[in-house]
Amino acid sequence: PQRPGGGHREPPPGAGHAAVTGELERLARRFQGHEPGLLGASRCCAVLCPLAEGEDGLRLLFEVRSSQVSQGGEVCFPGGSMEPGETPQDCALRETEEELSIPREEVTLLGTPDFICNQRGFLLRPVLGLVSPAGLAALRPSPAEVAEAFTAPLSFFRETAPDLRRYALVPQVPEDFPYGPVGIPRDYPWSRGQVEIPIWYYQGRAIWGMTARLVKEIIR
Image 1: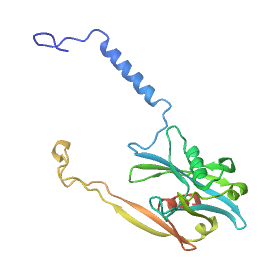
Image 2: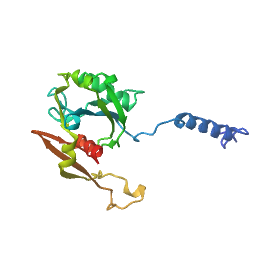
Image 3: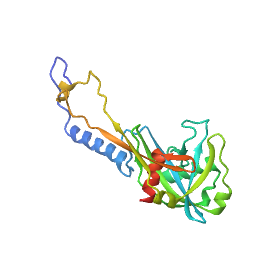
Image 4: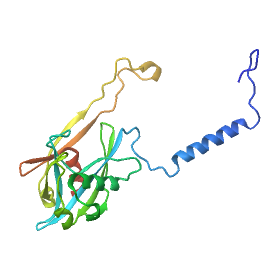
């Protein structure tokens, strides 16, 4: 603070320590017990990777997205955006019940495979679960979201190599980037990356993208 007429007033004794203590308390309240997520994520989503028992062993249950929603016609697992305070497990079970009418009590949760950090800025949290025979009998796709549902043997994915494709992630740096103030040259080696896209073809359907990446994680 400035004195009248110029100069600076010295802070009262102990003010600096009190400020530091207050800041430490604020940081502790914010981060103690905090579950880390994806920094800067626009949203977090969860899907159920549903298994079901069949005569040929375990099968994965998929749904085909309705033409009334984005990415209509694509094969995916049931899921969606996590609501505030919701766990991935709660979200996956809720979305499965909404999309396929499978009661959550008919799903036995088995664990959580590795998640996907999507380049669009969201986190996808998969949950693995076993659907009971009663749950399968109750299956009724919601027409607004799901065109149909089908199962595929887990053995098919283990015995059939996917068609692997890749695309590059190339940075597009704006022309007015402040290279000088940041202290880097204009030919700075910006990090690049690539995304692997596994594709399986099963009975006329393509299982690909993030859904196929999760399948690959489940069977490895």
